[in-house]
Length: 214
Image (cartoon, rainbow, N blue to C red; front, side):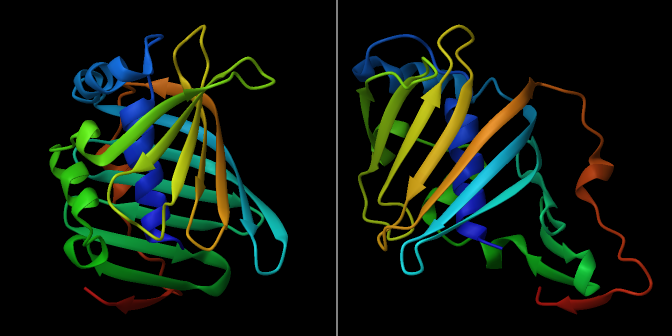
């Protein structure tokens, strides 16, 4: 499970989930204000992971549920079921096929400054990224390029595609220092749904071995 990648995706998704049709230099101010308005979202996804060293791409499918300030449910359903749950203090990773579950503390698992700012709501887009508008995609989606202002080997750059008719974020592609890429395409995005806290809790089945790293 790529912990930093998952929270980077959630971080970008919340920031850019509704992207306004304005000039690049104005985008950060508008998105900063919108970030505070998004309390929760649900979406299904198709993920394509490319590894440069092996020249191999694999495809995963699943769904994501997010609720401020820290709750995440990242459920990969294909090709192998995996479940990541994050609440205000704990992180669970559950792999049904292996009958294993792993428990971590939130603070111990996400130590980066950007992640902490995201979790506490103290995000500053102008401080974190350079934003550039690019040409539209074949689907007609507007494309943005994000370059972190601080070096991060896990995110050399990111591209985001936004549907102009709705302003919704449709795709994220992240490239790391090693030229690997991770691309998520979102479908059936739902903003501000009513979400039960039960979605972010985990009660291990009796036949599952729990490894407590908290």
